[in-house]
Image (tube, rainbow, N blue to C red; front, side):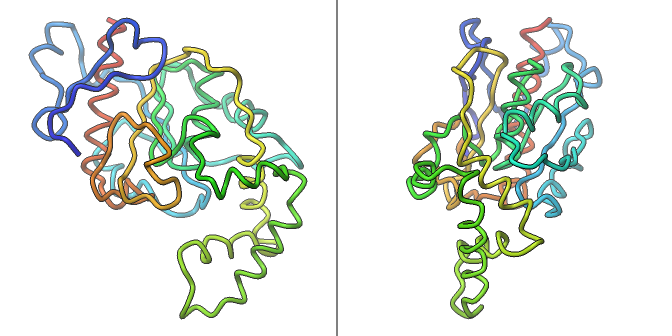
Length: 260
């Protein structure tokens, strides 16, 4: 994680030269902000969408650092629902004057919500911008098709559950979540990502992509993040809360400056 970094942002604001500098641990120059009329208390809310394991407190360590942030609960998916339709239903509960953020699967949902709401900005944490950033072993499932392989996903989960804990890997443990009645959500979410067909890229809002260099779920070599966090794992807000929060604060301030 570079302590001083000028970062061009994805989205419609890039052509206007939107950048932010992370200076002295993540603070944008206060004098510049004051001259531009920025008041931090006026900053729009940040809505944080969790990862696929929705009950895991992935944001617990950054919430104290982001006082205007709120965690958003997932809504139940409809049978065979596409990711785009699901994001559309979630978007109905969120205001456009906001920043939409998400970790991993939640980042994909945040991105699709942002296409609809056109918020002040979208923040992807340990997530991806497009299916081509999925690792090869995940892209291989797209040949089969997600919604057609729900039974196969359940079989994978059941098989993983039989592996002795002493030799389980992190991948095996994740796969066990696909098994049984309790795995219904994970099977739907996994299938939705496999079938994810985003609309052709349009410039709808500034996007920040933060990624850890030690992420094994979505390896950084397949992505093109704005901010790389050295040693950061997939649960980046847990492994590196300060770096993650600093990048988010710098991004939201920069995004607000261009609106003044």
